[in-house]
Length: 480
View 1 (spheres, rainbow, N blue to C red):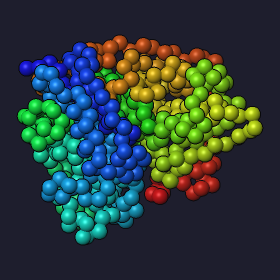
View 2: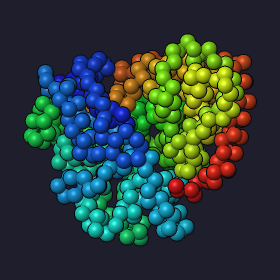
View 3: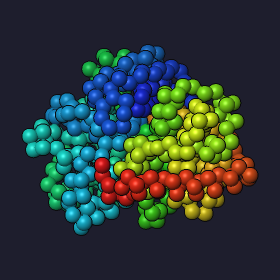
View 4: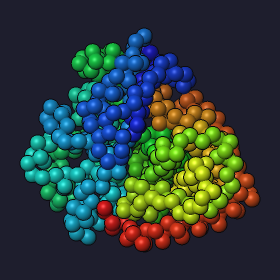
C-alpha cells in the first residue's frame, strides 16, 4: 500500500489540497481561491464542492494514495435526499436562529447547552433548523457540516465527525451521540442528523463519479476528518496536557487537552478530541487575523520592519477587532469593531500594528481562561506564525513562552495525520506530530515589553467594555 495520503484544508478564502507522505514531505499541492462566499455568514455549497474537486484534481496522479481526509471551517449545509443543498450554506459567524434557541425556555435551553458543552447559544445546525420554515424543512433530508457535506459528495455516505457534531448544539458531546431527547423536545427530527464517527475513522470510499471528477482512484478510503481549527489543535497537542495550542487564522482557535470532560473552564467550549475518548476545552475567539486582513485590504501592505518598529500601544491607537461578534471566552455575539484614539500622525503601520495587538489581546483573554496560572506555554501555528515580529508580539502580550511551529499549515498537516491514522499505517499521534511538524522553537517574552503590554491590555479591555456597553452588546444574550 502507498505510504502517502491526500489532505484537504477548506478555509474561508481558499481550498488547499496536498499529497503528503508519512514524513511530511509534500509530493504535490494546489490552492484554489474560493468564489463560494468569502464571509463567515453564508456560502455556495455547490461551488465549494466544485472547488474541492478541482483542488483534488491538482494533486492526483502517480501511485494510489492510502487515504483522503478533509478539514474545513465550521458551518451547516442542509441537503435533500439527492445530497443537493437546500438553500445557501451557513458559515461560522451565522447567528440566525439564536433567538429561536433562546425561545425554547430556560430549562430546555439549559439542558441542551449542558449536554452540548457550550456556554452560549451561538448558532449552528439546530438553530438553523429551528429558523427554517415548515415548507423548506420538509425538503431537508440531512444537516451536515461543510466538511461532512464534502465527504458525502465524495463517498455517497452520510456521517458527522464527533467534533463537527458538537458545533450543531444537537450532540451530547460527552457521550459522542445525538441528544435525541432534547431534539424531540424542540420538535426537530433526530433522523436529520447522520451517524457520528471518530475523526480518524474511515467512513467510506471514493465513488466512481467522484473518482472521474478528481483523477483519484475509485475505492480510495475517505476518513471522517474534522473542523479546521480542531484538527490543527489536535496535531499540535497530540497527547500533551501541559501546553495550550493556538491556531491563528481568520479567527484564533485555542484549546487545551483535558484529563477528563468534567473540569471545564468558565466560558470554554467542550469538544471531543481527535483522539477517541479524549476532550479539548477552548474555542474560536471571533475575528482576529481576519480583522488584520480587513484593515490591510483597506490601507495596503506595510513591510515587516515598519510594523515591528511601531512601539507597544501603537502611539495611542486602539483597534477593537470583533466586527462579527466575539466568541470564546466572553460570548458577545453583538460585539462590533472600532478604531479609537486616532490622531493625524497615525499611519497605516499604526493601524495594522494596533490590529495585531488587538488580536493578541483577544487571544490572551482566552488563554488566561484556559490556564489562569499563566504558566503553560503556547504552541503557536497558523498564518500569523509566519511572521517573526508577530510571534514576538504574541509572546510579549501573552507573557508566556511561545512554542513556534516550524510548519504554520497545521490544519492541512492535521488532515494528513488523520488520513495516516485512518489508513492504519501509523497509530501514534505524538510520533506523527514530530514527523509532520518537527521541533517547536521557543520564543520567550521580553520582560519589559510584557510588563508594558499588561497595562495596555487592561486599558484595551476597559475601552472594549465601554464600547460594548454604549452599543448595548455587552452580554451573551445578544443574538444580533
